[in-house]
Image (tube, rainbow, N blue to C red; front, side, top):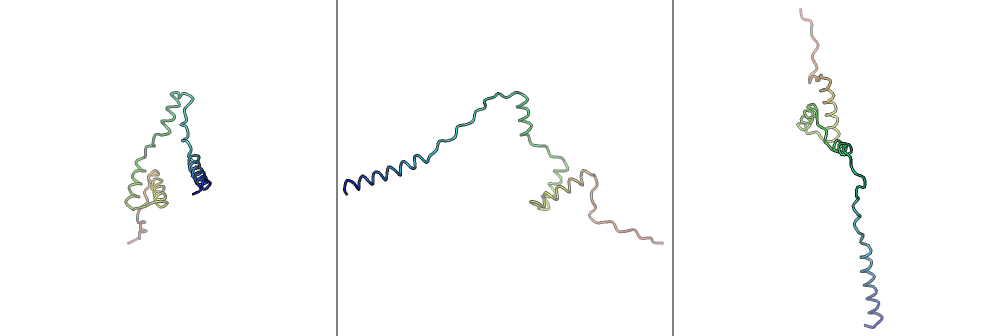
Amino acid sequence: MTFTSRLAVVALASLLATGTALAQTAAPAAKTETRTETKTDAAATADKKAPKERSAESLECSKQADAKGLKGKERRKFRRECKKEAKSGSVAPAVPAAPASDKK
């Protein structure tokens, strides 16, 4: 191998090594909070993160949807209608009542 070909190989190897070193970026610095939190800020943050408690109607409708094996849009539609019926206090009968006949 001649001197120029060796020089070319070394130059090519150094370019490849430099390219990968420059492609690596440092991790972004963590943000530090500059202002201090007051008690009201802490309480507001805790309220936002606290999960909402579910009503008895909601839990019951979820159990019924689970029993029926509903998922996705069908489940949401069923639960919406179930909760609406539960809140109004009127449960729709499964079979409509037959009209009364006048027997004499």
